[in-house]
Length: 242
Image 1 (spheres, rainbow, N blue to C red):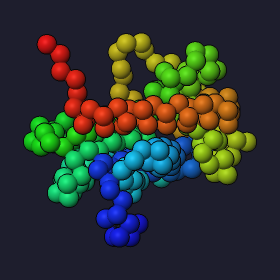
Image 2 (cartoon, rainbow, N blue to C red; image 1 turned 30 degrees about the vertical axis):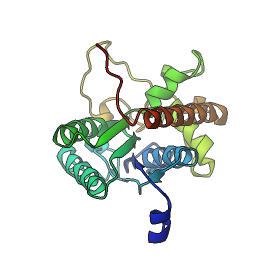
Image 3 (tube, rainbow, N blue to C red; image 1 turned 90 degrees about the vertical axis):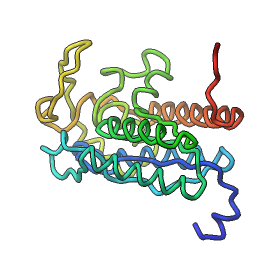
């Protein structure tokens, strides 16, 4: 984008994709998390007036996946600092509305903490976050869409389906292999990834299809477009109840 294009674009809000660079099994690319989040950002911007697509962040907090080479990881603290400085850069230039689309589970804590703290200090800055598209997509689709573990998993059925829909040339389905781990209900155990799977993949990527990926993609884009249009109508103010 040139400076002229920016000035003439009448941008009043921005979208930031946050991803990671880490092993996603033998069948998916290292940039899967960034690629999915970036695609969603660009697809939404095509339909929402005034939405500026920022360059994606390709690195996240991936230390819990680092037993599988090569994970390029930031600490949670570093990612929080990066996000705060991105927020401040936007604020300094008058872009006071931001949607963050996150593609990686390890980023959730940093994004939430950075956004909450920044908004306390700068309440004029409005920040919305799609924390976990993989969970949201599963909630949006009809029950029974997925065949294994509700479509969840790192490199599993849902994520592989999304990549088949978005960038099939980067997927090698003949190498897809994963395992559904046995995890306790209700109480979360903080795991290291090698404790869950020898393949670097959880869930069952062999159940992935292009059709499931297209359903997930379309549902997420519709959700985000509707959300942003509604937020614009309300001037990004939440409704107040007595």
